[in-house]
Image 1 (cartoon, one colour):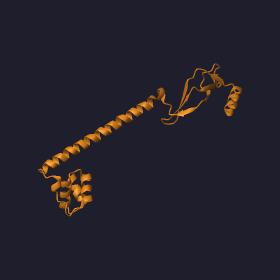
Image 2: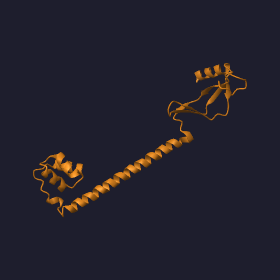
Image 3: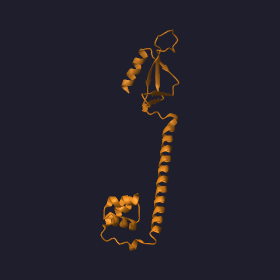
Image 4: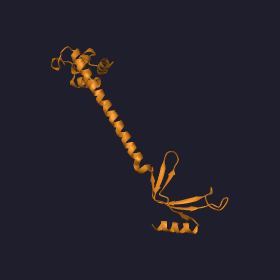
Amino acid sequence: NRNEKKVRKMMSRLNLRPVPGIARVTLKTGGRGYFAIDRPDVFASSGGGGGGGGGGKNDTYVIFGEARQGGGFGGGAQSAQAQAFMAQQQAAVTSAAAAKANNNKMASVAEEEELGGQGEETVDESGVETKDIELVMSQATCSRAKAVQALKENDGDLVNAIMSLTT
């Protein structure tokens, strides 16, 4: 753009010489942040300290180009690694949830066997509200018969019924 042309013209007046052959410039900010400039225009000025031929400690560089945050070294290798890690973590969480659900199903089958063949249809739900039964079933992960029995033993107290089934 126009301002960039003006700055480049001023750089030539300040004895800044172009530095060819630089493909990428990476600037480290405080902490872990990076700015990367691909295909930059780099100008250098030797700062006159201690002996003439450049390469001194007082070199100054001016860099033109579009800075991008994060850099992405290796053509996006970091982001690909991060995505692979997230996919692996998601798979681990999913398999853990499936294992827990399988354990809950096995526990429910064992509870049904403990009841000695007492089926869902023979449960007397009188004096207990349906929503209370469903709440106890979901919180304690138990059968309907166990939930009704716990509610009756605890006089309809939801908290005590759930606690009796989970401890």
